[in-house]
Amino acid sequence: MLNKTEELRADFEKALGEVKDQASLEGVRVRFLGRKGGFLTEILRGLKDLNPEERRLMGAAANQLKKEFEARMAEAEQGLQEKPKTTIDLTLPGPEIKIGRLHPLTQIIRESVGFFEKIGFQAWEGPEIETEWYNFDALNTPADHPARDMQDTFYLAPGVLLRSHTSPVQVRVMEKEKPPLRIITAGRCYRRDAQDASHSPVFHQLEGLMVEKGTNFTHLKGVLTMFLEHIFPFSFKTRFTPSFFPFTEPSAEVSISCPVCQAKGCSSCGRSGFLEILGCGMVHPNVLRNVGYKQKDLTGFAFGVGIERIAMVKYGIPDIRLFYENDVRFLRQF
Image 1 (cartoon, one colour):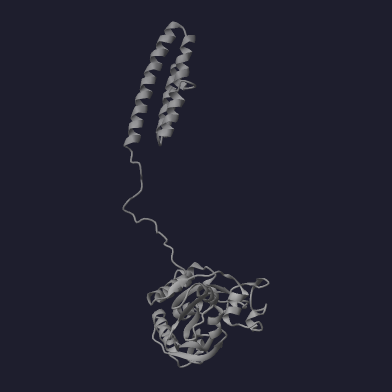
Image 2 (cartoon, one colour):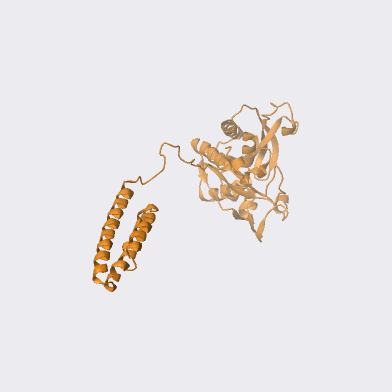
């Protein structure tokens, strides 16, 4: 029995040396001193089976061993309390915090809308699912116009479609508000374009409208020139070229001198020296009549520009598909 207590002391010291925390220390206590199944407790309970002389010797040895175990347990617990609770070196730099950023198209939209708000335009939004009335009829687009064909427009049901431009917002606002009126709107548009480096079936458009007595083409040219000079970080020349849109008359395409070749002609501008940026014009009288404006001397102008187009020219991006692939290597540049 005395040999057994020596073996028990050796086992206890080994187990105590492996203690790392309070949980493992409690495990050692239960294993050796626990009331149910503890090794030392079992020895003390077995004393009744010994003769008086052995019981006296074994009892004294067991009690001495219990005192040693309890003292060693107290020392171990004290050591755990004094042990540092963390091994982190606070002088080392922390982990890199990855900060998100706005998509380049969102940046262009916010910057553009912010500019027009500063010069008196009010931002509006409209639905992406439209009726033919708002998308075509109210905008003076006849029923036989090519843009209304199934191969050019996403129809969801007879007379219902995904808007092909943001111009329906102009009609909706004019139906509710009376002139003078200055609005700016931006959002997604949808057309059945084959996807390539310069076309996408889903794209974003920024559109502006100003309607008030005395508005003329000079005002349109001045506002657009200020906007283009604000949005592009390089110097350029502006060119207005006659064009046609059903909802404006007269109409024009606005181009800027190519920033790559300085208007000398290169592959980026198709050797023309200029890059087409947006379309614009004076609001067609039929559009004003369709929304209930009856003043004969009332005029206005409207314009529309592709957000992707602005971003591609501003940042020198060669492929429109890069905006939609969500490649972090591309997006983190902006």
